[in-house]
Amino acid sequence: QVQLVESGGGLVQAGDSLRLSCAASGRTFYAMAWFRQAPGKEREFVSVINGIGSNTLYSDSVKGRFTISRDHAKNTAYLQMNVLKPEDTAVYYCAAGKYSAELADFDSWGQGTQVTVSS
Image 1: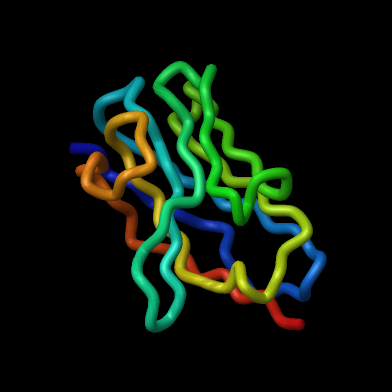
Image 2: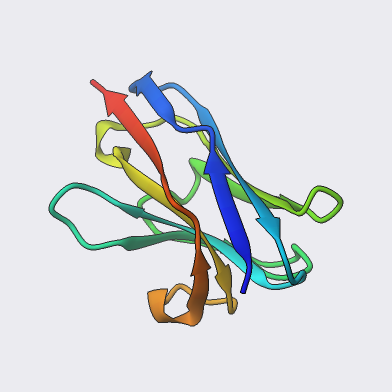
């Protein structure tokens, strides 16, 4: 398994930007993804990047606003979030596993970081 630690969450206003980071330890060249969970809702897929960083997927709700990337030298994945909306408010989780948008394909999870967007 991989140990994952997220950081970068916070309270921002609508239209602002945030960058989340996910520092990983353990095996390398696995896919890394971001999921989020809003209060009272199920955890949902946000974005994934493959092991070498050449392919990415995004949910329709964040496409064009969020960008996922990774730095192998730092063993860290990032989620750049621009033009944030109140509906982006959630706990954001980093995950490592297969290149997929399915929750079940990820076997390592971080503890989560809160993102709150005020209107």
